Image 1 (tube, rainbow, N blue to C red):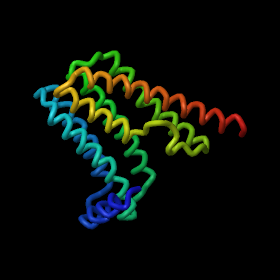
Image 2: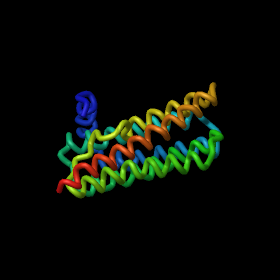
Image 3: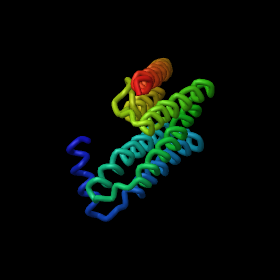
Length: 185
Protein backbone atom coordinates (compact mmCIF):
# COMPACT_ATOMS: atom_id res chain seq x y z
CA UNK A 1 0.00 0.00 0.00
CA UNK A 2 1.21 3.49 -0.85
CA UNK A 3 2.94 5.23 2.07
CA UNK A 4 0.84 8.38 1.60
CA UNK A 5 -2.36 6.37 1.87
CA UNK A 6 -1.03 4.77 5.05
CA UNK A 7 -0.32 8.22 6.53
CA UNK A 8 -3.85 9.38 5.68
CA UNK A 9 -5.16 6.12 7.17
CA UNK A 10 -3.26 6.85 10.39
CA UNK A 11 -4.72 10.36 10.56
CA UNK A 12 -8.26 9.08 10.06
CA UNK A 13 -7.70 6.26 12.57
CA UNK A 14 -6.87 8.88 15.21
CA UNK A 15 -10.40 10.27 14.84
CA UNK A 16 -11.82 6.91 15.92
CA UNK A 17 -13.75 6.43 12.68
CA UNK A 18 -14.36 2.72 12.14
CA UNK A 19 -12.95 1.10 8.99
CA UNK A 20 -16.34 -0.60 8.51
CA UNK A 21 -18.06 2.80 8.44
CA UNK A 22 -15.63 3.90 5.74
CA UNK A 23 -16.45 0.71 3.83
CA UNK A 24 -20.15 1.54 4.07
CA UNK A 25 -19.38 5.04 2.78
CA UNK A 26 -17.99 3.32 -0.33
CA UNK A 27 -21.45 1.87 -0.88
CA UNK A 28 -23.27 5.08 0.02
CA UNK A 29 -21.25 7.12 -2.49
CA UNK A 30 -21.87 4.53 -5.21
CA UNK A 31 -25.60 4.78 -4.50
CA UNK A 32 -25.32 8.57 -4.76
CA UNK A 33 -23.43 8.13 -8.05
CA UNK A 34 -26.29 6.14 -9.54
CA UNK A 35 -28.95 8.48 -8.17
CA UNK A 36 -27.14 11.59 -9.41
CA UNK A 37 -27.23 10.38 -13.00
CA UNK A 38 -30.57 8.53 -12.87
CA UNK A 39 -32.55 11.28 -11.17
CA UNK A 40 -30.65 14.45 -12.02
CA UNK A 41 -28.74 13.57 -15.21
CA UNK A 42 -25.62 15.01 -13.61
CA UNK A 43 -22.54 13.50 -15.18
CA UNK A 44 -20.29 15.70 -13.04
CA UNK A 45 -21.89 14.43 -9.81
CA UNK A 46 -21.70 10.88 -11.15
CA UNK A 47 -17.96 11.32 -11.65
CA UNK A 48 -17.45 12.94 -8.23
CA UNK A 49 -19.39 10.23 -6.37
CA UNK A 50 -17.50 7.46 -8.20
CA UNK A 51 -14.28 9.22 -7.17
CA UNK A 52 -15.42 9.52 -3.54
CA UNK A 53 -16.52 5.88 -3.50
CA UNK A 54 -13.11 4.85 -4.84
CA UNK A 55 -11.28 6.96 -2.27
CA UNK A 56 -13.28 5.39 0.58
CA UNK A 57 -12.48 1.94 -0.79
CA UNK A 58 -8.77 2.72 -0.62
CA UNK A 59 -8.96 4.29 2.82
CA UNK A 60 -10.91 1.60 4.67
CA UNK A 61 -8.02 -0.84 4.55
CA UNK A 62 -5.48 1.83 5.49
CA UNK A 63 -7.56 2.86 8.49
CA UNK A 64 -8.05 -0.77 9.52
CA UNK A 65 -4.29 -1.37 9.47
CA UNK A 66 -3.46 1.91 11.22
CA UNK A 67 -6.01 1.34 13.97
CA UNK A 68 -5.23 -2.35 14.38
CA UNK A 69 -8.85 -3.15 13.53
CA UNK A 70 -8.33 -5.58 10.66
CA UNK A 71 -10.91 -8.31 11.04
CA UNK A 72 -12.16 -11.17 8.95
CA UNK A 73 -15.63 -9.62 8.98
CA UNK A 74 -14.14 -6.32 7.79
CA UNK A 75 -12.50 -8.12 4.86
CA UNK A 76 -15.78 -9.88 4.08
CA UNK A 77 -17.76 -6.62 4.31
CA UNK A 78 -15.22 -4.83 2.11
CA UNK A 79 -15.38 -7.38 -0.71
CA UNK A 80 -19.18 -7.59 -0.49
CA UNK A 81 -19.56 -3.81 -0.63
CA UNK A 82 -17.09 -3.67 -3.51
CA UNK A 83 -19.33 -5.98 -5.59
CA UNK A 84 -22.43 -3.91 -4.81
CA UNK A 85 -20.58 -0.67 -5.56
CA UNK A 86 -19.26 -2.10 -8.83
CA UNK A 87 -22.77 -3.08 -9.94
CA UNK A 88 -24.23 0.33 -9.07
CA UNK A 89 -21.42 2.26 -10.71
CA UNK A 90 -21.40 0.18 -13.88
CA UNK A 91 -25.21 0.26 -14.10
CA UNK A 92 -25.06 4.06 -13.92
CA UNK A 93 -23.48 3.99 -17.39
CA UNK A 94 -26.93 3.09 -18.72
CA UNK A 95 -28.00 6.66 -18.05
CA UNK A 96 -25.18 7.93 -20.26
CA UNK A 97 -26.84 6.12 -23.15
CA UNK A 98 -24.84 2.89 -23.28
CA UNK A 99 -26.37 -0.41 -24.27
CA UNK A 100 -27.75 -2.44 -21.39
CA UNK A 101 -26.15 -5.47 -23.06
CA UNK A 102 -22.67 -3.92 -22.77
CA UNK A 103 -23.39 -2.94 -19.17
CA UNK A 104 -24.55 -6.47 -18.35
CA UNK A 105 -21.39 -7.95 -19.87
CA UNK A 106 -19.21 -5.52 -17.90
CA UNK A 107 -20.99 -6.30 -14.61
CA UNK A 108 -20.58 -10.05 -15.19
CA UNK A 109 -16.88 -9.62 -16.07
CA UNK A 110 -16.31 -7.45 -13.02
CA UNK A 111 -17.93 -10.02 -10.75
CA UNK A 112 -16.10 -12.93 -12.37
CA UNK A 113 -12.70 -11.25 -12.07
CA UNK A 114 -13.32 -10.83 -8.36
CA UNK A 115 -14.83 -14.30 -7.98
CA UNK A 116 -11.90 -16.06 -9.65
CA UNK A 117 -9.50 -14.32 -7.28
CA UNK A 118 -11.61 -15.17 -4.24
CA UNK A 119 -12.15 -18.79 -5.25
CA UNK A 120 -8.50 -19.38 -6.19
CA UNK A 121 -7.33 -17.82 -2.93
CA UNK A 122 -9.74 -20.07 -1.01
CA UNK A 123 -7.87 -22.96 -2.66
CA UNK A 124 -4.51 -21.57 -1.55
CA UNK A 125 -3.45 -19.75 -4.74
CA UNK A 126 -2.21 -16.17 -4.28
CA UNK A 127 -3.92 -14.09 -6.98
CA UNK A 128 -3.04 -10.51 -6.08
CA UNK A 129 -1.66 -8.76 -9.15
CA UNK A 130 -2.69 -11.52 -11.57
CA UNK A 131 -4.19 -10.07 -14.73
CA UNK A 132 -4.03 -6.82 -16.64
CA UNK A 133 -6.51 -4.80 -14.62
CA UNK A 134 -7.71 -5.00 -11.05
CA UNK A 135 -10.61 -3.11 -9.50
CA UNK A 136 -8.74 0.19 -9.15
CA UNK A 137 -7.84 0.25 -12.83
CA UNK A 138 -11.39 -0.68 -13.82
CA UNK A 139 -12.75 2.22 -11.76
CA UNK A 140 -10.24 4.64 -13.30
CA UNK A 141 -11.33 3.58 -16.79
CA UNK A 142 -14.99 3.97 -15.78
CA UNK A 143 -14.25 7.49 -14.53
CA UNK A 144 -12.59 8.24 -17.89
CA UNK A 145 -15.65 6.86 -19.69
CA UNK A 146 -17.84 9.20 -17.63
CA UNK A 147 -15.57 12.22 -18.25
CA UNK A 148 -15.29 11.62 -21.99
CA UNK A 149 -19.07 11.19 -22.23
CA UNK A 150 -19.31 14.90 -21.49
CA UNK A 151 -17.61 15.97 -24.69
CA UNK A 152 -16.84 13.00 -26.94
CA UNK A 153 -19.30 10.10 -26.81
CA UNK A 154 -17.33 8.15 -29.44
CA UNK A 155 -14.11 8.14 -27.38
CA UNK A 156 -16.16 7.27 -24.32
CA UNK A 157 -17.69 4.29 -26.14
CA UNK A 158 -14.24 3.15 -27.33
CA UNK A 159 -13.06 3.28 -23.70
CA UNK A 160 -16.03 1.13 -22.70
CA UNK A 161 -15.09 -1.47 -25.32
CA UNK A 162 -11.46 -1.31 -24.20
CA UNK A 163 -12.57 -1.92 -20.61
CA UNK A 164 -14.62 -4.94 -21.70
CA UNK A 165 -11.67 -6.32 -23.68
CA UNK A 166 -9.17 -5.77 -20.85
CA UNK A 167 -11.61 -7.30 -18.36
CA UNK A 168 -12.07 -10.35 -20.59
CA UNK A 169 -8.30 -10.77 -20.90
CA UNK A 170 -7.89 -10.39 -17.13
CA UNK A 171 -10.53 -13.04 -16.48
CA UNK A 172 -8.78 -15.38 -18.89
CA UNK A 173 -5.42 -14.70 -17.26
CA UNK A 174 -6.82 -15.50 -13.82
CA UNK A 175 -8.47 -18.71 -14.99
CA UNK A 176 -5.26 -19.83 -16.71
CA UNK A 177 -3.14 -18.89 -13.68
CA UNK A 178 -5.43 -20.89 -11.40
CA UNK A 179 -5.36 -23.81 -13.85
CA UNK A 180 -1.55 -23.84 -13.93
CA UNK A 181 -1.29 -23.70 -10.15
CA UNK A 182 -4.10 -26.12 -9.30
CA UNK A 183 -3.29 -28.89 -11.76
CA UNK A 184 0.09 -29.49 -10.11
CA UNK A 185 -1.41 -29.89 -6.64
